[in-house]
Image 1 (tube, rainbow, N blue to C red):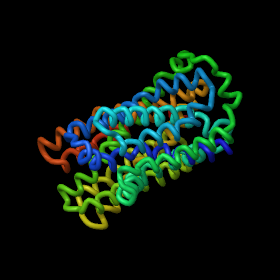
Image 2: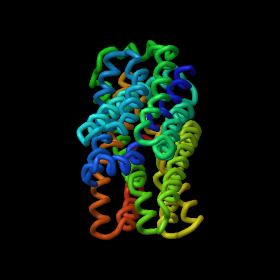
Image 3: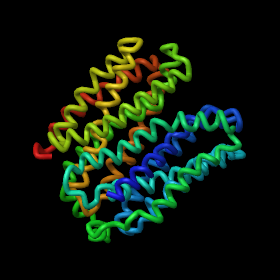
Image 4: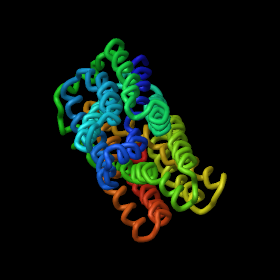
Length: 376
């Protein structure tokens, strides 16, 4: 339980740093005279470094069972992300983003595998605590960094590294080393993955489908609400925080439901129920629309802990690797493909059309879930 508490706190700050780029971009565009293409490239580098590279760290953490993958990550992410404000040029900013993303990527596979290690009962509930802590950090990240830059100024952005360094000190001092169940898989072995390749593949694409909406909406909601629905920038940012915070609650609720009804049922409920909620957001205005956005975020993210726990139970000796596949890699690939695709569709038609059209994917996900074993 100590590991769960420590890693949940660390997850909060890791994901707080992972959502900082949105707050930094306007400042960096002005300070470094960046083009919008360069600003977008910074975001792409962060997605690649922090998400797509996670399976590499999963392989390494399954091979070398040192807690340094998790323990050093908050300090590495915090120092380099916070140093963005000190970058003298575009190349330096790229380096800071890539190195900060490496800290984010190294944390997730091992921490996700170790958070519930040794917990035999209600693993979905406890995994939901760990994952919801990260989702909450991601929800608060844009507001935290915006307020810091506004009040302290870009030259003092390095203050944001302090929580990460402090959390690393806590992890180094108090985080237990991996249990014997983790040490049993000292050498990486493809055979456990090959034996369950079919349900793992289905789970991966279900995460990919959820991530299409999750990451694309997180990227474009403020711009959509400002440009096409007349929201002030601050109101649009608050709406994004509402969506992400509801998702944090949804992850916790989904873990509870999975322990009671099973992971397969929860995934089906999530895929089917998020569509009318998000449709309500797009097709109405005012408080009713925001209610639909919050409910859509809540139900969409039911499945975050569920997918991870199911994958870990399929291949327990390779928990770090499958955790990386179910989280960072699926998230990153969805972002790399669908963020530019949604932008292209928005240029051709409108952002409303681009974002609303993505609701077809959870419907496809509902039918794909039927391919999972019924005892999943």
